Amino acid sequence: MQHKLLMVLGPTEIEKDILEEASKPQEYMRTEDYTQKWVRIFENLKYAFQTQNPVVVYATSGTGAMEAAVTNFLSSNDKVLYINGGSFGKRWGDICKKHNIVSIEIPVEFGKSPQVDIVKKYLEENSDVKALFATLNETSSGVLTDIKAIGEILKEYPDILFIVDCVSGLLADEFCQDEWGVDVAVSASQKAFALPPGLGFLSASKKAMEYAKKSNLRTFYFDIFDYVNNSQRGQTPFTPAVGLVNQLDKRLEKIRKEGLENFRVRYKNNTEILRDGLNKLGFNILAENPANCTTAVYTNEIDAYKIVQLMREKYSIEIAPSGGELKHKLFRVGNFGDIQIKDIKYFLKVLGSVLQEL
Image 1 (cartoon, rainbow, N blue to C red):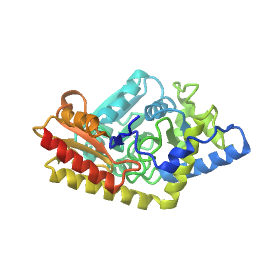
Image 2: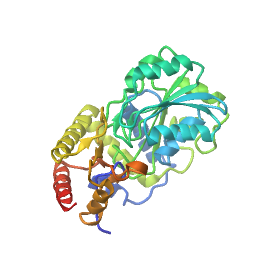
Image 3: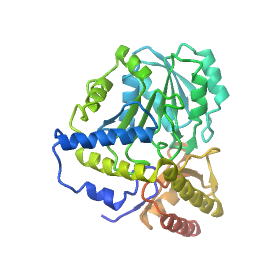
Image 4: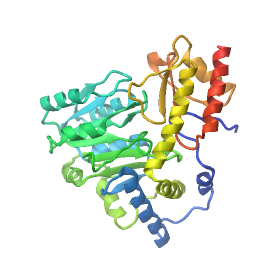
């Protein structure tokens, strides 16, 4: 299979030494050695989330972790608010409605960040809700949400859970779960963790765990108590994705060694080089407050989908198309994972050639 340079929002380019971890022989997971590996992973995940809460690992996608964040802490007919600024904000509402939770949308214009005063207004009018759902980085638009500011507002509503999707934002952008008052945070392996898809992460506060005791939606496989109890003994309740877990262990050790601040600065510098090059080619960035590594690009008069096709079919570079009415107006570029400055420069050079062809 020909290698295609992945400039999408996941899966990502994976470092060679991390890829090699997947080729090692499988291990039996119920051994003391594997337990010590899990202990190390759980501590390093706490560092990634900036929390003292337990962080559990599901063999699932990010959406699976999102559903676990709904089913573990809420009950049918509960009432919630969700911020909808794109596909993944909408997904919170879709999951809640699937489980017969009364879901009130806080609509946000596509490409715009949620306005904190509007969120506050919805909270004032719906102070009886059980939870507020938000998205750190709306992957469909590349918009960053001020989670810290929303967390400050929620201090006035101590009975409301603050639940945040950090799937494409964790590590790449600042996120401090405990300091910002986030009760439940979820992420996944295939974005800034730069691993293959297949692992979902969930961190829950003591307050959230109290809510979980009353939930009537808890499922067998995703039950948070099973995972937290097993994490305390350095294990998971069910068979983990052993190869992915080995890759996660090594990746977290590398992130810890580099340090979160250095990690983010490196990603930010690369993202700025990418966006500067896109601007020089005449493109406009959609997001008014863009997140690291996720860049949604308006193509003006040029057909965005033709750009995506040419990049893929002629030059073996994958960029992410948009759907619906934006299919021919917008494409998205990701620089998560093992994307170096030389890759960004090559991408920009090829994109310039594609523009000339079109």
